[in-house]
Amino acid sequence: MKERNWNADIVGFILPVLLFSAWYFMTMEGGVPAYLIPSPSALVNVAIDFATGHEKLTPYAGTLLVHSIASVQRVLLGFGVAAAIGLPLGFMTGRIALARESLDPTVHLIRIIPGIGWLPIAMVWFGVGEGTTLFLISLAAFFPIYVNAAQGASSVSPLLIRAGRMLGANKLELFTTVIIPAAMPSTVAGLRLGLGISWAYLVLGELTGVTYGLGAVMMDARMLGHVEMILVSMVFIGLFGRLSDMILVGSFRRLDLLKEESEQ
Image 1 (cartoon, rainbow, N blue to C red):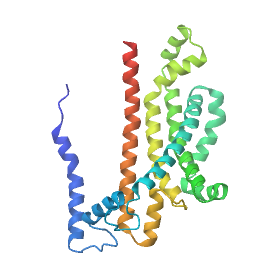
Image 2 (tube, rainbow, N blue to C red; image 1 turned 90 degrees about the vertical axis):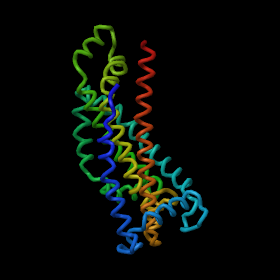
Image 3 (cartoon, rainbow, N blue to C red; image 1 turned 135 degrees about the vertical axis):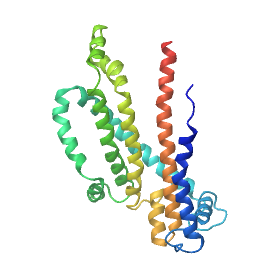
Image 4 (cartoon, one colour; image 1 turned 180 degrees about the vertical axis):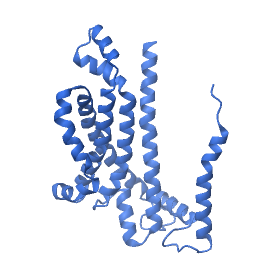
């Protein structure tokens, strides 16, 4: 059993503690105005009120659940669309020359265009709100999923392909039993990148005028001067993003364990 490196764990806390201490002392004596950076205690109080609504400190008191559900649904839907399109196209591009020659140049050309560049035309196509948000999330998440799936599929060892053919696997069976499992590390990396980007583009999409969502709260709070709500929304987006990443990685680890158990 590998011995835990406690020194590394302690070092990892040094920078957060220093940043928190600087934040605390900067706001404790009014050195930085509250409308620029709220104090840690004010931020915690607003976050609790955002979740419970007991103190009614802001117009958003007690609305965390409804805004979180709206944002999570958009991320899951946009990410799901990106994965449903990006994974099969990536696997085909990685292994089929015709697909690579016909699709890859166009995909990488579109990939160069920054996400913010798609916002004006997305608003023309889908209007202000839900459709634009889902389009931006799906488009942004598609590229890392596609690229990593293609990279993983193209790097599968020829020995594995040859072994699968010797065992009688046809082309479809080679994809499902050899290529896709062998490309899984790169595929999972692409899915994690796509999921993280989905949360980033969620904010961009929700800034365009949706009614509910953590990004919508950030935009509304900016106009009303509630800086603490902007920061609280950022914190919750970070927490949900981290939680979704842990669930994604844990799901693949669980699948690996189930596969190992079935093979024993």
